[in-house]
Image (cartoon, rainbow over all chains, first blue to last red):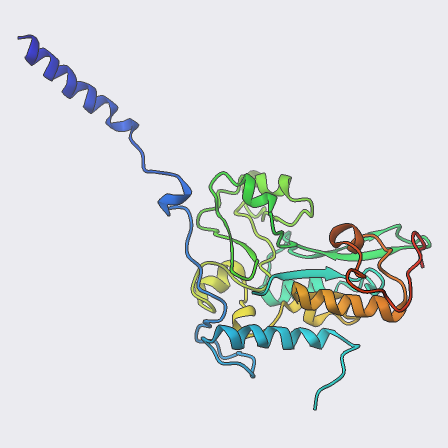
Length: 79
Length: 211
């Protein structure tokens, strides 16, 4: 009789506590963040700047460094 | 690896608000939200200085630290971005940010505060680069097009520099050396140290002297 009561109590407790369960909310669970697409992988943009190869990280970084020199009015223009 | 940064040259900024306009136009930023703005100190007085301010894409961003839903992330280039689908619009980031970068649209009844909006360094958000969804939420993704932020590229006096931190630091350093002053103006020296590190400048800037 006591075993049946204990089992019944366990079932009731499990049912009552079911609402307390929740999904993991830590950063490691991966539910909070979306992985971004790297900048050197452009979408189907019709406005790509010329001078670099889409999908090539090295070329993209070189493009940004070169483009930044347009802000340098002390730079010697290259021919 | 590039580390994207902005620096505004207070000696050159003429408070034209071209950067603000470029940003608003490029990203179709709604009314009431200013991802970038020009701040003027000592307005109308001798020594007046203006500086263009937006998200500085901090290396140790306080907004990231305080966000209760952890919606911020940093790209490989050091650009601090956020996920509007995760943002709950609580405003903690705006209290934590020393630059007032996080903005909140108030386009609903009873002062409803929407999801946070801020400068993306023209790098969009977590959606696919150049997608319609990304454009609608975060504006144009110029970085993935091989371009730099519109505000910096549109600056008429080249006061606002944007790009790889090493490159813009070199540009600013060459300016300071050429004009023989500027490093003493507030901002640069405080934030990044003297631009003479490693070598002596051609002209020594005078400490504490304002132009």
